Length: 93
Image 1 (cartoon, rainbow, N blue to C red):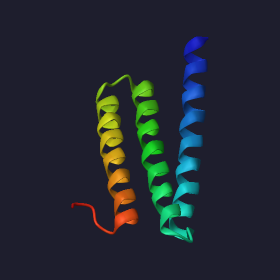
Image 2 (image 1 turned 45 degrees about the vertical axis):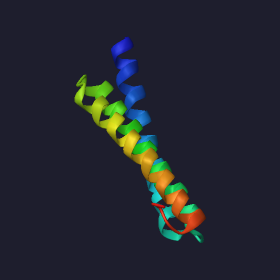
Image 3 (image 1 turned 60 degrees about the vertical axis):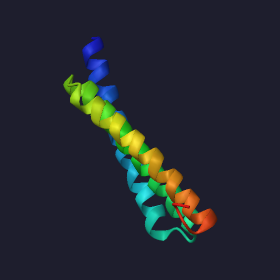
Image 4 (image 1 turned 30 degrees about the vertical axis):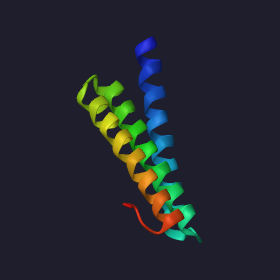
């Protein structure tokens, strides 16, 4: 019984994460300001990371968890660099 519940809950989570990525992609394309676009990129990478985690739960492979960790680290650094670029106009001083 618990395997069936786990299967359906992970499937629903993956579908909802894919929907959230699609909505963030809409904001990325339509966003009126650069800050909205950066926030959409940040949302997309977090959703992609969580989608990889749910895929790792579904398959039982540790490779997906490691890929999610790398995406999380690179996405965080990219968000900081973009925010610094918007504030000062340059990334490296």
